Length: 114
Length: 117
Image (cartoon, rainbow over all chains, first blue to last red; front, side, top):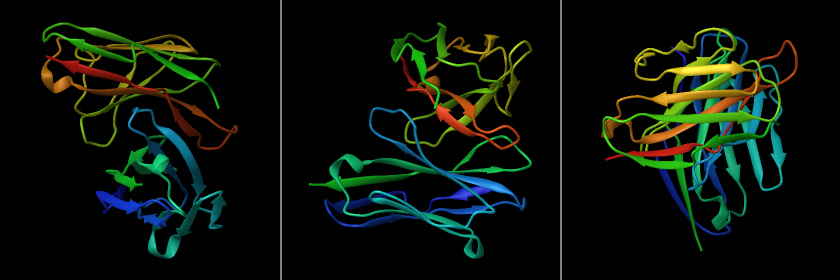
């Protein structure tokens, strides 16, 4: 099976808290690509990051960081010192090398309260 | 990344009518995609819009209901035909960009929010 699971449906935090969004994927391909997208209330889908399966280096971009662990098939996303503007639905997605199609998780709604 | 625009940004339509959504990209792209996002749900791929040939539809989506045009490498349209309230969704187009020989990243347009009464 090829699938992405985001078990957290909704998370609510207070501003300045750190928050981690979980993503677990399944694929039979040895080469694959993982993505995170942000969907604010306005509805557009904003690309955040792409990670290739052969590159297990973690990445940090400002307050955002991503932890890719092939051993547990996880690609988790952490926001440090969250802000109200981080409130959005976040989608994790997968493209197996055998397909060009994006497989989306169900999304995690993050609410950051002032 | 490419700049993608969609028209209209939102619309309210009566059941039984049809709506055509336009997707314009500021550069030539090979692959364009159309997605549907029903309220509170994730994104579902409707079809891949191929330039110069018929679109490739995913299971559960048919050409009669969602005809797609792709007249050139920068433009595509999706029509939602004979609409019912169940068609109320956000419709998004996306394009692929990346390095030659590598699986590309998909970038999305701003979406069209459709409400069918």
